[in-house]
Length: 275
Image (cartoon, rainbow, N blue to C red):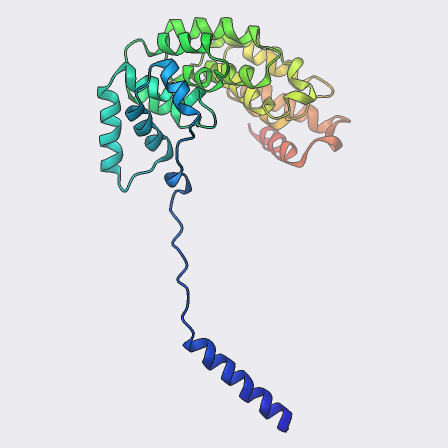
């Protein structure tokens, strides 16, 4: 009993000491961790090469990161870049091709600048840049005949580069350009090295629409070793819902059914039930 009493006394003493000790206030975490990130030094040679003024690159970086105290400041910054016209767009071009400065938000921000002949500017820099991936992805924001023709020509020329192929296909999908489908090799994208972008390409096919895209998706679903079947079937459903339902039922009733990933299986089961 004495030992228990001593232990209780000691615990009480420690708790009292802890209560009196000054506590460190945890630093508030920023709502957007990107807000405090600084531009890497490697961006400046790129900015100089494309003709983007440093002050505009810094503003574009803030927009890219969402580093604003409120929406009013963000709108004012966008307005400043928009007023700069071509140079404002070039600031985003520099970020797109710069070292570690690209971002999926950039294509949409480029479109908001409403720069005349923006597609021409992007095409010029795609042709001269060593890392045009972000610019190719941005082409889907500019719906012109020139953009469409450029991407249709670009896609088959980069069939050995999964990332560029994916970005070109995505842009064609965003433009709902059905002519792009005939140049898409679905047999090639079943190879292992395409695993990271396969689903994106299949989804883009669904967005392109038209009979060629439907035929490519059916071909993919009938390829014995293909995976990502749920995405392919869903993409087909955006073009031909009955065909997607028919192929979903076929796959679920086939010998392949037990090897289908559970996520794909769930999607196929839903499509098979849709009337």
